Image (cartoon, rainbow, N blue to C red; front, side):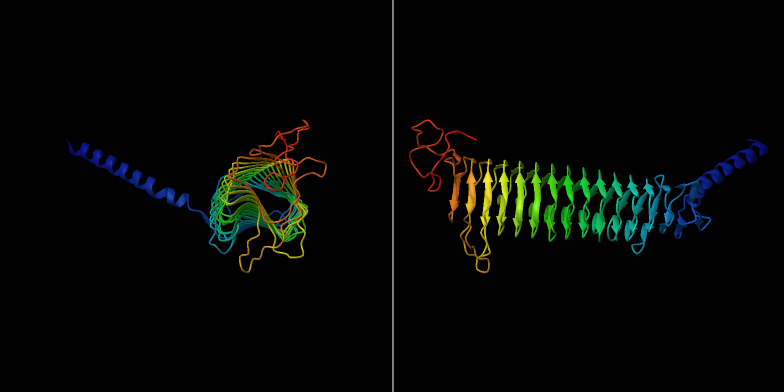
Length: 433
């Protein structure tokens, strides 16, 4: 090889080496995230001017990641994250809306903030298609009279508190099509009323799926809840008028649907599988539990504790520890619940009215309930009647019992012999309702 060829070869090798080194080094500088807090000001300007945000009229979009916090102070704009990431330090908010209306926040990834997206006193905004993860507190939070917002199609995961929370007088908000996965809890309305939670998935959250606390007139509809140590859907300490409808709830450590110290709630058309208690109602009044499927509960499918004025109607209560269980802790309470047209089948006990004294939890009179036109079929023990309940409709018709062996002498569909059946039913039906 001549000297000239050697020089050319060495030069080419060195050139390729430098190009390769450049390929390794240059992207680190190019891809480095912008560091610092960014503000979209009320006049539409962006601070600092070097922030990685493109502006076109009322449309704002990221063109790089941000290590810091994005504050939005202008109403009526759209802010598109374009899939870029805002990374927090656990003390700041990822995106903060402060007293703004009509803003759309979409396509952001927010990781490691104190709260992923927080809106204070902000109304008619849309928060959609974002991924919020690893917040020290909540994923998405509405605070203080934030009304009429839509929180839609977000994925919230690994947040220490709730996935999506509404706190202090937030009303008329729609929370729909979101997935809350492995947060402290899924969805929460605290002292917030008239909100709709619809078509959300709450999966493997530590404590509960959806809860309404100290609130009124919230709706949970068409949601899927799987996993949670305490509750699937819980409602407590409010003033009632809630709706829980068409939800699927599975694998809950305590109560699939939990009601406590409430009134006037509709629980309808839900499917509840493999919980400790299916539907539990404590210290409540005027609850309608209708057309639900409850199966695989460790203890009762439906548990009614120190509660009155309930209608339990048309439910399929199958393969639970007990079908329906009554307990009363209040000596002065008349329970007065109505249980009709339910299928109570293949449970350990079909219907159980508790007269056991557990020391500090004293069982008072669980009588005064009316039970008729139920199909009580193939339970290991059909009933345990500790008190005196009413087992017919007052018009000569009682319940259908799979173990009734009497005869209907006058062919009116009601048994005439071997009465009262199970010591309670003077009018056992000859065919299922």
